Image 1 (tube, one colour):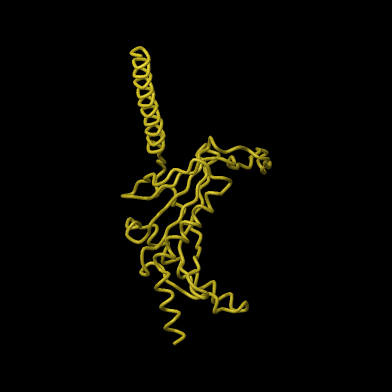
Image 2 (cartoon, one colour):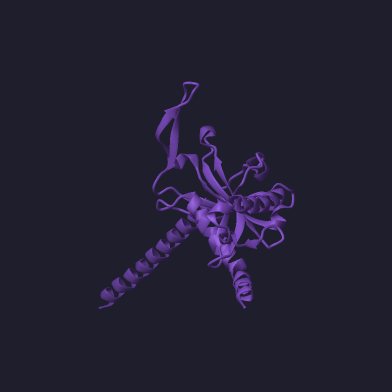
Length: 227
């Protein structure tokens, strides 16, 4: 009987020891994963990425007729082994952008529509290229590294050099960065993009933030206008 009891006690001790070892290993694996993610960084400066001064204006619908404008910019450094990315610059308030109604223009008023967008873009671009960009915008960047890209076909240029078309692997990780004090800080590590493009990640982020930031204001504006 004593031998049986001793065997049970030894078994329980070994079980607890194995359990602790397993928990320790899981903890190490988890910490390693976090550390691997946190250690990832992107070091091309914002100034370098925006030196051309070219941005693409985009808009998030806030109501049936009102929308909020923001800036975006693609990043393509595949021929320097620098990967692909997509940047969004989201206005923090209405001093740099504005809620507007572009649906008021008919198809024959396209010049008026384009002039409004050009004017809004010009004002935003001036602030985006200034040293105070972070005062006016939340800047996010979605990045896929070169090692997760593959060449899918391509074309031969006038110089006779073949330039492949680069695309991301289906399960490539995406890194989300936010500009803080002039540096890119990793804010989210997405281990599997699930075939979602870095552009789509950016568009979804813009919609989420701008609707939360300006949605109520737009609803009040639309309601006041109809009353």
